[in-house]
Each structure stands twice: as structure tokens, then as C-alpha cells.
Length: 88
Image (cartoon, rainbow, N blue to C red; front, side, top):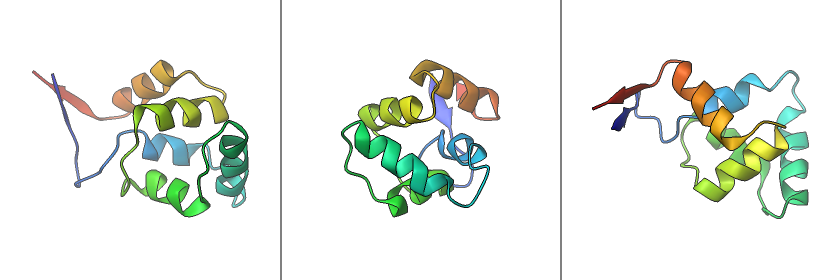
């Protein structure tokens, strides 16, 4: 199966990550949480992920999910359910 991305997005979880942004300080708080988990990330990288302009590795996906208090499979599943299509 292939994932069909619209608008030339580089990841499928960015828009879902940004949906957790309930206030303007979300990205900074997420950055701190992720840094505590061992990923030295800058808030610009999180913003790029949210915008879909930066790819996400499997390790980064797991750290993002943990920082968001959700499992990586759930994050992927929800991203796919939100409108990304699988092509056979």
C-alpha cells in the first residue's frame, strides 16, 4: 500500500500534531517535553512538522506521540483517518 499525500506534504502526522496546539505556547511546551525524552529539537522543527514541510523519522514519531500522551500507532491511525488515503 502507498500513502497518497496531498499538497506535497512531507509527513502525514503534522496536521494532527498541530491540532493539539490549543494555545500559542504549545510548540514550545512540546519541544521541552520532547527534549526531556532525548530528542534535541528546536521549536522551528516542530513548526515545520506541523506545517508538513519536514519529514518525520520513526523515532521522531514515537517521541512526538509520547510527548502528546498518545501511542505512535494511534497517532498514525488518526492521521490516516483524518483524510490521507492508502493506495493499493
